[in-house]
Image 1 (cartoon, rainbow, N blue to C red):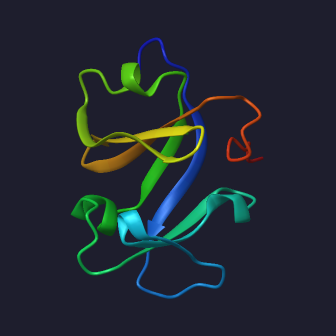
Image 2: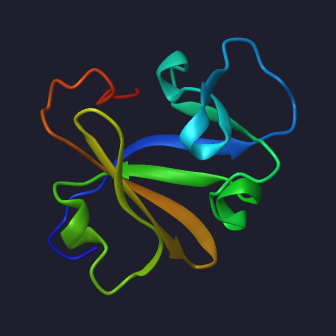
Length: 119
């Protein structure tokens, strides 16, 4: 991605198993155990039948990177999910890279609570 620094944020893994600590996101028909609960940014995703999210996101693990500007980062890319704000202060979009979903994230502040660094 020319001109944009990428910083690893998390990996999202689809599952059919219920997991402790799931949070339901009604808008997406999705249960999630967030990356913030993992030292390495592992996120579990369990989708309801009829979830509006693309099949590729529901069936293939994705990797997420923080970028400075989501709109610029998706220019010229195959956009899977248009930029949106799943929670306050966060903008995300998904692209397809080499057949796999990639999430690009932008935070409105460096100290945003979800803008964690994994070591």
